[in-house]
Length: 504
Image (tube, helix red, strand yellow):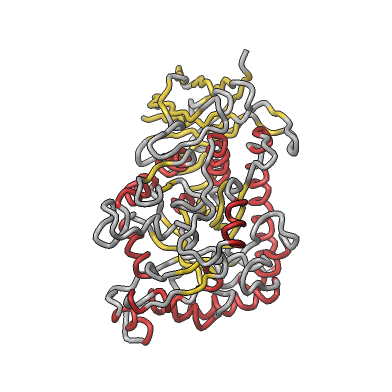
């Protein structure tokens, strides 16, 4: 007999409205993300601006509302002035974060233009590593001021009359990391970020600012970094950033799928730290969370090390090109569920990254086609159906232990109610890799709803990958749910991602 999970869903059990920006992503000047990824002039697949139309179509399919740019580690040596103006007059630079050669053929104005093509907003990062307050202010003036000043008129002279009106700005990147150019102590960063934020808000009071949080949960300064820096920036910033990547170096699928529990603890700790600072400052506003780098990343690290150490200063080398397995897609789905569970405080998140570099979308070299990695699908489902109010399910499910985690729930699930469309979507991952689970869901609180479809992503081969022209892992509609009298019974196969949709 299959294991059983019981769940109650009611539209009065509300967590919060989803901020659609939790389905954001990230483009850094790294590897083939920009050149060979979104930009490839001369390719028959590209448009009149040199942007790949097949990539644009896939990004639009994901419906990504905000994209962080231009880094990442790249931003800590970014000279933004080199990326604007006539392309043939832009200098090439040694890019120190990834030891590549940056051509500056795509810069701020080109990226903003591309973002419009994919119906997305830009989340801009400023260089607080090797530069500082004045450069951040100048960049903001260039991007957002209408005209009549040095830098706004410079933008107009560059052929961009209307301001970009970029509303979200990151105050540096991973400044707690010793690998970061211009790495700061928490006291140094807190002071610099405070003064930068203060100045930027004088230029444009409508912008939202993201203070740099810890680079990951394992940093030795976590969470003291957040506590110390937010004491300086609390009055001026709106969010604190979180970054986290997971890998399966131990080749232990069960334990790998439990790593979303670590993400949950990371989020809870940062929320608690933000609220501690709020209490200490006698504040009235909550600092919300921007989880602006997250993904699975470990497959390509040996190649990355070889290229950066032994073959530096290439233009768009093949860096961080993880080819994702089916089990990677399951963990991505679990992480998305974790964001939804904390929709009251996680307001932005950026899947890192979007094209070619640890990405859901890949392009073949030498002008070959674009294709979907396994992780494309849970992200697409969450972005498409995870808009509305997150409902808090009451769940009773079995548990199991793994090598590094105890009492791991068999089923992780969340529900999103879209009142406008009169739809309810249940996202569920059975992360028990050995047993199917029968999930019995009480939806009597959603009177008058019927089952629309049950979509599943599953495979018996955890290591199966997709490739150009060979899509081995893809979703399908199944007859594994039945709704009778407000009680829905669903079969969740072992190790599966499930999207169960109900409509009025």
